[in-house]
Length: 249
Image 1 (cartoon, helix red, strand yellow):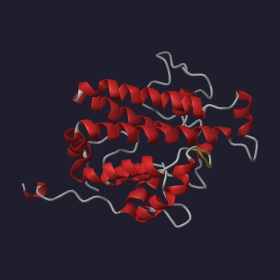
Image 2: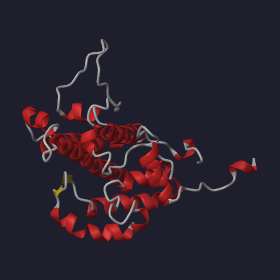
Image 3: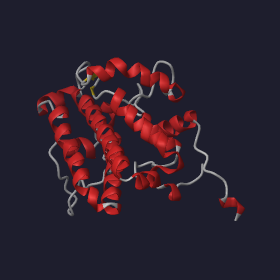
Image 4: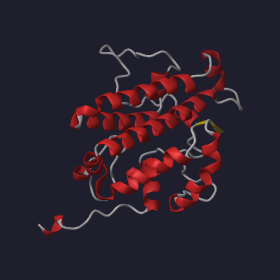
């Protein structure tokens, strides 16, 4: 019985980053940029193939850029798991959750799918115009943005369920969610959509300096997911793990 009486010990920030990068393959670095991720045939929350095995989506559509991207499938699984759990455990929040989910899809289509098929095809041979990479990266940004909005909506309306999902240190998660909306810009490649956030994000970098991969490559984009890895609240496919189901490292 004594084996169950100790508090959960999260990973160190360094070990969390290493696990996120080396075990989950979710860290954008110079050797694994998003354009290399396309056509990985990963598995998001929805079916990419019909019962006969035929691929369901138009090339370079939003669904395609999720199905064919391990980065976006990972984030889709977490967003949908969180959404489904919120709706299941608190049906009164279904309408608010649906609004957030629909806005994520709408904004992703409007802001991220910006090129013609010809331009996307050309991006694979051009040295300076990685349109596929930009779209994958942009979609990732909106998953982070709307996962954050969904979580904060839950905190405001059902703090008990929020604490159940994020465990004994749930206030730390609430803080990083708030800081994400305050400081982390949505970007198209390296172009910030929200200039004000981009101008202020040095405060975010300094506050979470302990989580930096190195001084030249701070993890401002992936901070939320690194913390989920640190507390073992997400698995290698992006699925949500509740505190009672997590495994000690």
